[in-house]
Length: 541
Image 1 (tube, rainbow, N blue to C red):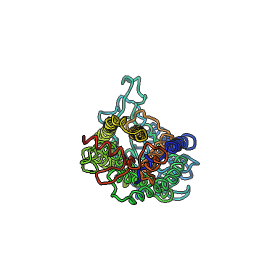
Image 2 (cartoon, rainbow, N blue to C red):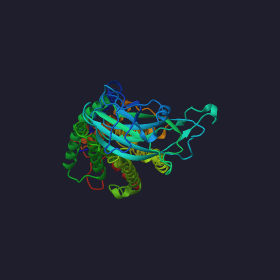
Image 3 (cartoon, rainbow, N blue to C red):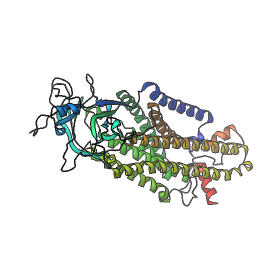
Image 4 (cartoon, rainbow, N blue to C red):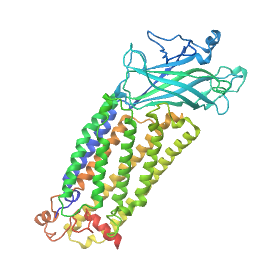
């Protein structure tokens, strides 16, 4: 009768397996720390002030800050007033990237943050609740001589949140406000070499458009993109890990189907975990290098969310199946109180993501952070998600504690067993507890990664400090997930060994009639492991 590999594999082989996985885990961190550059780069641009002499243009005109067809420039607004140039005829132009550089599809995405340099004037102060109206256009081209092609155009509104640190007196005129950075644009792919941004600040006194926003002297843009070197390392990891998880998953399920009984809930959930890991591993991002797929960011978030949901649900069911009695276990409906909130939370995060990145598929200048209500909603989502993640980990620790206490209830019967049987069960209990501790460690690292990722993604929107996440953390956590899923499917796969036969030939204390396998299942009320059956009986008692 076949047990699982975790019970039948010798201690020596298990140690070799554990050390091997640990070395691969160290390698995953080293790949990010020693080979890959930092995940993202930020480049600051000072927008050039161009003059549009045509009052009523018949077609869109693009203003270049440098090059052969560069625009007519002014340095200050005092110069514009001296030349009687109206504010509506000034265009702020920014070319991405800098001169003699090119953008690349390896950059994956482009996030742009807006920063106003606003000077204090007694007669032109920033009013309470000031809103800036922006007429912005985005264009692209793939060489330095062709015409610009419009990519997007929109009228956007951004709330100013500025503070003046000095006293508002005539002596302090000309000093600058301290303003929070504003979310400006996000593009889900970088398929072209050159991008041009033209920004106008239309003024209409009758409609109160751009009135009471202070004296804007300059506009600064910060462009953030993923580093090409990190992208290549990330794609290489995905390409290497995809067949590894796919092969072990097929091998695991084949062994399950060869058994004479139908698979139990725990075995099905392990297989589903392998499917979700394979889904997130598949390196479809390779196509984004050759195709302009702006939806790849949204698709990546969906894959990440599915894996999070499956991983968190697996841990709940994995612990729960060692707490339920034989009448309650092996039924997915029993876990609706625990799994339901996980699915609901993931669905809420999906809706939140669709509200921003879904809209950005058609309007890259849209941001949920642009309004006060949207900012409060987004902040609330991130804070609540972090709190729920911490509460989940505490609940998981409580479940693991209950499992350990459940197993300890059976240890009292071990002294009455034969020496070989007692040693065997003590070994099984130690292996299982060690696996549960590894599970808790993996869960803790996952929760930390989730919280830091949420904070790191929103820090530009908050205008505050952030936790710097280096490449080693990304590659290390990603490698940890794959190694954990690999280990679970390998250790819980049915083994062809029979412990009783091995012990009968090497230790006379164990009889051939003793069914002491960890994973043997004889009937539908039995479980995939011996401890699974033991804990079920203890819970029932």
